[in-house]
Length: 423
Image 1 (cartoon, helix red, strand yellow):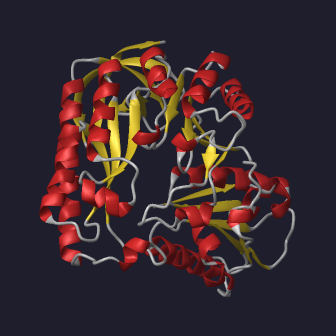
Image 2 (cartoon, rainbow, N blue to C red):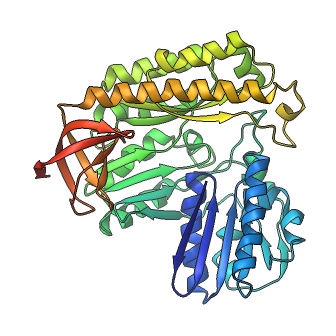
Image 3 (tube, rainbow, N blue to C red):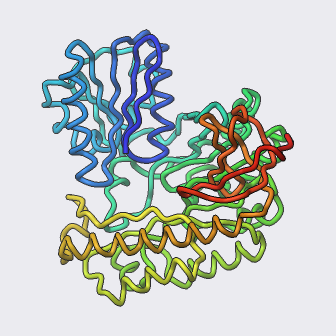
């Protein structure tokens, strides 16, 4: 999935991959613009799959073919892992590693070629990165990097060790965003629940969440991006119970519902841990909604093992799924394991998506007749507190309104705006 953002004076960013990439793309665009760059396209790559790298190279060729005079700088995870694959492309002017792309001075230099030092030796300090969406929601990167070594994942070698934004710096960034009028902030990271392990005193994610909500009273909503349930600290669980401004929505990095597959993935939780976590959060915050990342067709997965993952949708009460058909990533241990036939992988991904769609529809049906608090965005839609999308008609973006839910269609709720009341 890619996004393209164009802003005068001619700095564009083509972004592949995760939400953190999107946030960092915004920071790079601003830095390049401040450095006076023009007629520039930054390609921020993703390395999660080999296909993502192929798509980035394809996009680079297309951009240069359509706009021969444009300068192309490539950065991101794929560029960090395989810089020569991009540096040798005649369309590319420069390759920046993940450490250099966060350096404002890098965008003032017009050095051709490749600048990709070892990410493991990069400075431990994390540069603040902020991004925005529809002028209503802001994203704050509080963490980057990963100290874990899941067998299917190459990202630790692209992002380096876990690094956290100092607590006070993160609070100050949240305060700036709230003062700019953003009513919702989403905390993001590569491994968000490892926040603080590299900082003095090791403040955990829960402490950061509580500090932001305490020190930024003007903020209406605080939301978390994907987390690892086994790393969730006690203060974070308490925050969900005590802080109504912490939104009742969590996206969990689960990947599988079978213990043996989880072990072969080198995950840190078992199936029972995930179920227990969801039950506990639902007990203290009944309205909470869970999404999850799930991988279909991991090497050696049998039909019985797959059924354990399929059953996790019901056992954890999952509502929104990101389903990934397993694709071997060169350089990872999983790529050397016994692979399943592609048609089996495809079929299991389909079955997971169908089960996920049915779970989402059940959730949507349960919202009909309720009045939900919605933050409006452009295009006549908004998001409820549990991140469900709601049609709000002609309501202006950036408004917090209460909407009566009258139906659903196309994975969205229909709101009756005639009974709106601003809050």
